[in-house]
Amino acid sequence: MKIIGLTGGIGSGKTSILNLFKKKNISCFNTDFIAKQLMANELKEKIKTLFGTDIYKRGKLNRKKISKIVFNDIEKLNKLNSIVHPAVRKNFRDFIKSNKKAKFIVYETALLFETGFNKECDIIILVIAPLKKRIKRIIKRDGLLKSEITRRIRHQWSDEKKADLSDYIINNDNWRNTLIEFDKIFNKLNLSY
Image (cartoon, rainbow, N blue to C red; front, top):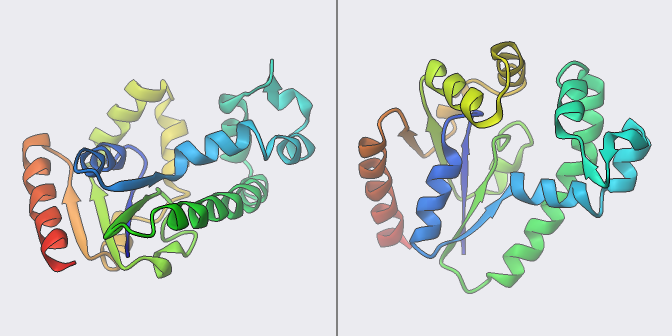
């Protein structure tokens, strides 16, 4: 089994690419989705200890509040990451076991390089998009202010730095071209393994 690391900055469209892999019946692991599930359940008490019990409203994590805290306080961000990332990795180990007959699986995360998980991947696909387009997508999707988005982007590696360490790059500026690029990469991967 080969592990494909799928990464890209916030708003680059990596989840759209992940969905293309899913349509091809490839087993996919979405770290964001898993992290949200873990933070709503198993990690709840640890997060309350770190941020206070009022970080959950009616049992649900106040995502806007926690984002505001961690993206303005690097120490708190690091503490949150030290709780969430190991739990996500443990979950991924279980995912590997349950998909051991797969030819390859996709591990999607924005922080592939930042967490060092790129070292565990056989192939890395980087999704990029123009910054203006990324910001527009995030504003539409999450309703964030431009200043909040740029603060989050500053916590991620640049596309240039990631590109040097990636096997394939998908420029997600134009969806029609993105689909062509994806198919080319998918065919190469499918033929090689």
